[in-house]
Length: 170
Length: 170
Image 1 (cartoon, rainbow over the protein chains, first blue to last red):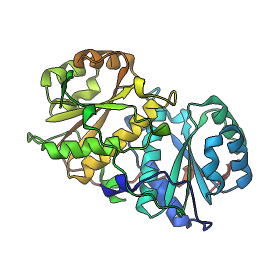
Image 2 (image 1 turned 90 degrees about the horizontal axis):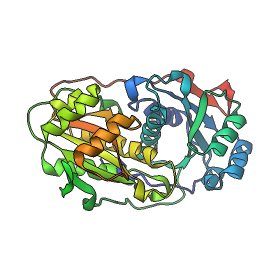
Image 3 (image 1 turned 90 degrees about the vertical axis):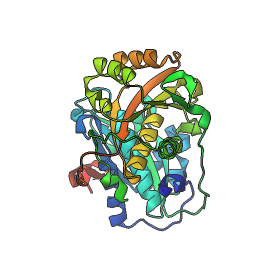
């Protein structure tokens, strides 16, 4: 699937906003990820308030790409929806990856900024958006129309494939 | 992206093997997932030995779909490759999701059978494939040519979208 290779981490964005129907398409892609026992333990916060982003960057320097992105989407785990214990971060990761692929397939660019499992980042973000304790900020996706072009990349490594047993390479 | 909606959890398979070039395409899709600081903390084990699968099912009854799948792929975390602590399961989840999408886009069917974070499943699988301690079985993907047809599904839920703050719906 070409989109898998087209998707690169984009950190430079045009100062052009992202249309609302595209934003909803991206979140819809996230909501259609598989989850353990179909629990869908997620919530989504669209952030375009630069003051929030400025505060995030203070505790999370690697989140700087969000500073010049017109929009960011915060994917949160919702512990109240979890029925298969310990699976919510896995489900939220699948949702985040779906969203990054949808972003790439729409001709937009995005970057996955990790929040979970770093306590300080989680707590500060939860505070900034005013969410209750059972909401756990998981990933922040900075996105927009790209202002940099990165060629597709392939990181295939045949040495990492085994056959039935660790002692047998495929 | 249509493939996101076409991907359904397929649990019934034809007794037809999967061509090797398709298997490699699927693993390649996994290896091209994003990972924290680009660490790629993963390894892949192709399993077609039914004795291994039978033993897995004993500690993991939900893994039964793998019994009638011609092939399964075990995605493992490799702790020796982890540079961003605590991120390897997130990276392996993104890899698993890429693989499920590639499977769907190739006209095959697959099912994500969770291993991590269940200790018993992890230990038994590690033992069965004879892997060292730093290898952590993460997910088992049962796959093959589908023997059931499931219509695309959409689990979008507008109530789960917020705008800058938990007190404001989008």
